Amino acid sequence: MRTNHQSDSGSTVRSFQELDESRQAAGLTRKQLYDAAGIHKETWRRTAKGSTLPNSRTLTKLNDALDRLIASMEVAE
Image (cartoon, rainbow, N blue to C red; front, side, top):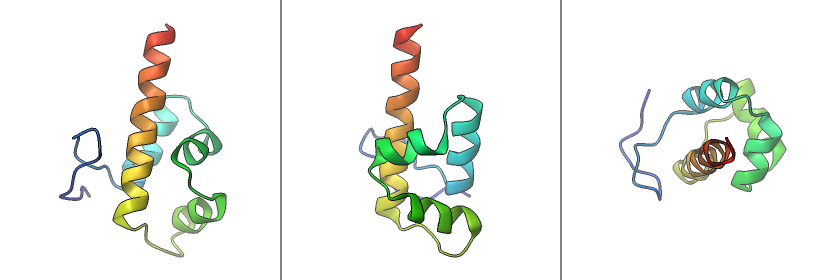
């Protein structure tokens, strides 16, 4: 499921599930992503568990952080 809004980088915001799949495919840990996004680990845990739904601001922060982390990995190669 994709949302209709865009991240600060202008890309379409991925759903939490898509973010987690992309994070895993990139070889990043959950901690790396939620730290880079400035998201508390409990927010991540509750969302991953399905106890809560992420708001659009949280998704935007996670999307932007994932994009930055992946870009920094590509530059390092």
